[in-house]
Image (cartoon, rainbow, N blue to C red; front, side, top):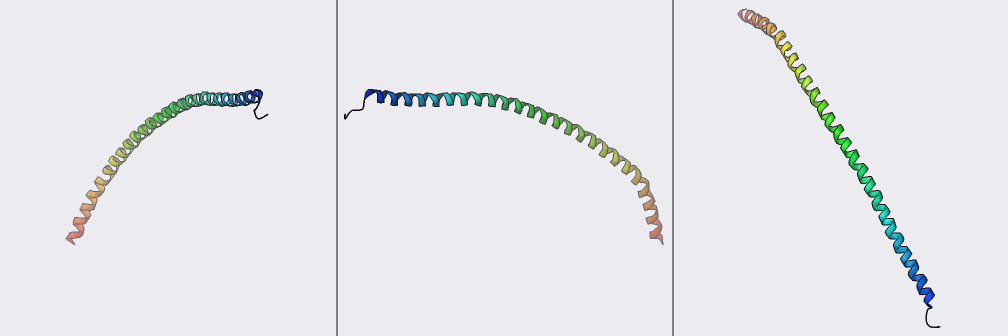
Amino acid sequence: MSEIPAIYWMIIIAVLTASIVTLILYLALSAKELAKTMSTLNKTMEEANNVVISAQKIVSAVEVKISSILETLEQINNIIRSPLSLVERFFSRFNKSK
């Protein structure tokens, strides 16, 4: 009676083996799901990278157009200020002579 029967040892070893196999199966399924997730993440990152590149191209094009508009406005400003500065110089000479 001091000994544990062999059937109990077999049940304990079977439960331990089933637990280890279940754990390994769970880890394998988790690794498979992780691989799918990483694949999806890589595709999403590539799409996001393409969107960022497109946005950079759009911003660059807008910067060029804004630069062109600013240059045109500066030229218009110079055209308008040129006669005004002549008139201002004329009147400043006239006011100095008084």
